[in-house]
Image (cartoon, rainbow, N blue to C red; front, top):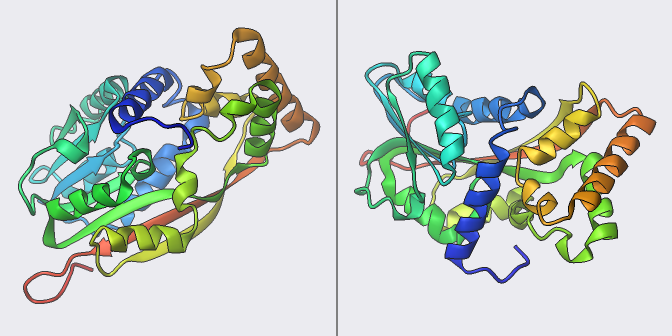
Length: 283
């Protein structure tokens, strides 16, 4: 982040932004949460009976697939700062009859759980919100059992382009001071940077997979729904109503005029395996 917030202030801001974003978070336009959440879990080699920790869980895009994989004998603990998102997750789990998942409000850096508590740990689009990412990785690694896997997913170099570029150009025209003030994922947007982060945090056998994907737009309005259902709402909310509408119109007019039907999005998946006493990790 480019603003001088201390850790408590930064976490409070994230909590406020995503509580506000919860009204849009599960809209069809934001189906990418489920898509990339599922792909992350596919990398963890989960087994029936496993105990899984999902931090920055949102409304359950990766936690619920984990609960399905580990079955009735397994357990998923899903942690997030935003109570509104957790409530959405609880509702979805209840509707699906998933009783092996607990959605809990909190900061995963201060859970105070014992060493080696989980068979697998996932953090999907969340690690970059933590001011000290190395310390955060170290804490997750501490809670992972020998033989288990840690999965950290982040945004790559292109994030919903070209709509993203037009959005920030429109923000610059209104409030130059807000440009890229809340895009912390830029710190690890390259595979080498993400790999180095995990290794500095103590993770071993780190592999990073880059995915060049696209996200379809049914209508240009989908883009604004995406902005309101994610971290960009933190920027939008700092504009007055008239400025918000100008940014919205600039973005939507561009998409309409250029007939943009899909956005480019790069995703990075980092998978780390912790060796057990035999020197092996699950495959």
